[in-house]
Length: 99
Image (tube, rainbow, N blue to C red; front, side, top):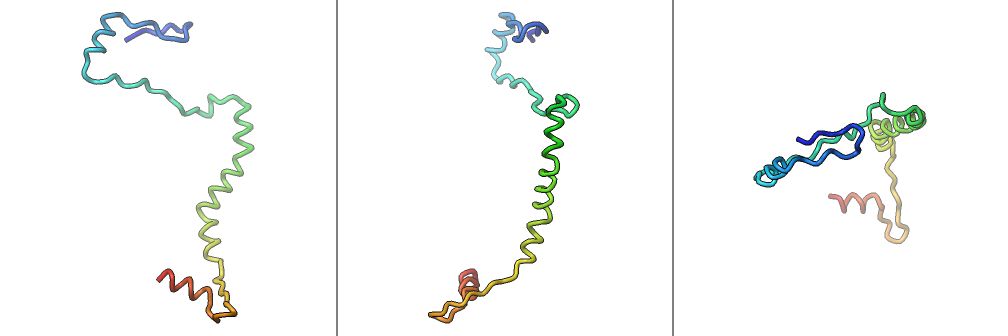
């Protein structure tokens, strides 16, 4: 495995024997693992202020998804519209289309 110099942004070139053995291998080398998660401790203080700014909005949205939509649909009263030409109810038309 190639060694990485801390002062250099790129790893050192692998030796020719390592490169040759990698080419003759039948299995592909696994891509390097990258940790894409940023821990809260590693975040600069500027980002912490943004997290606090959006925290209430995100919590409110999560609450709406979990409880609000269900409550909203339970509280909607059925509406019936009467067509004056045919004397048919729109509610009955919709129910007959669904059934």
